[in-house]
Length: 409
Image 1 (cartoon, rainbow, N blue to C red):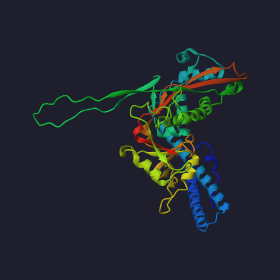
Image 2 (cartoon, rainbow, N blue to C red):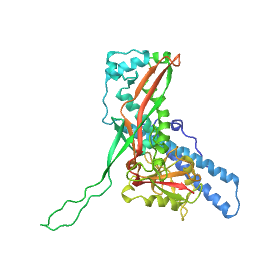
Image 3 (cartoon, one colour):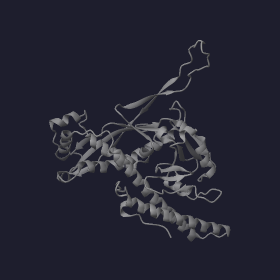
Image 4 (cartoon, rainbow, N blue to C red):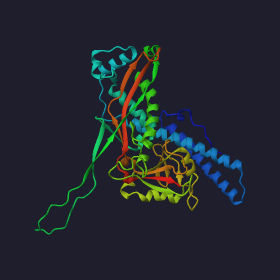
């Protein structure tokens, strides 16, 4: 029973297009079949436990199916991310500059610098990539960066972003029709500045490769850069300390390095009694601890190992708390809320903040400073030409009131 190999197109980042939903449907069918096998095997294990018998073969079988379910659900999640990125690609920022793009590609291939390219020159000899290149890289990051899929992403034109937060203090009162209206107290506004850091990649290619006119330089650069950027971003969005990098949402939790930075307070921490486990009641406490105004759009976040443990939890009536995706575009669910796998979340362990819950769209802000810069370096690694590529990215908790994290004993 169970355990399916992923179809070839489901391995890695799935090449799913809007007209190719059949591939996703195949994965969904395999996921549902393996999920049934998992539940059947768990019921079999329950009978063994009741009989005070522990068959290691049954345990190993359940773990194998659990791993297969994880792989298939991850494939569905990747397909969903791909489709979301394709939808975003048709946005309003479609500005292109054919002359500049052609000059830039000529510079990448041969080092030729035409007059039209000078407008992209900076003081360090780098060149601002064409707008469509910037968008290609960002779209690829959306595909493979879960935080970019669930958080608010905003493009900024300066080194940072400052917002005014109303801490309350506005006065009011009841009056009659002809009563005077004395001045009331004014609100207390506090500035909260979110900075950014610089992320880089340094892919290389031989000159012969660049001379090949059939190479799609835009796709090649994006393919070389996106995975490295996504890995670095992912870790920073979760737990970055804000030093030359984004401030991760866990760093704003009570006791974290940035707990006192946001004028609205820290992200509240709820306790888990187990050192490496969690209960249904503790998950429910997270759900009902956030204000109701944040619950629409709220979700759970955790890593793969934690999801594997959560998948085994059942309620008092024997129903699984976790449910797989049933159709393309929908995530897996935990206690009726979407669940997003964040690889950089800590494992369930003593003192770890292993699970997050809340409205990340309102709670966490990612800032992309417009423009990817590329420096062509034909000297450092001959016979390769290196392309030192940088992008300025920031991130911080924007509104901690709708976020919660769970800390193990």
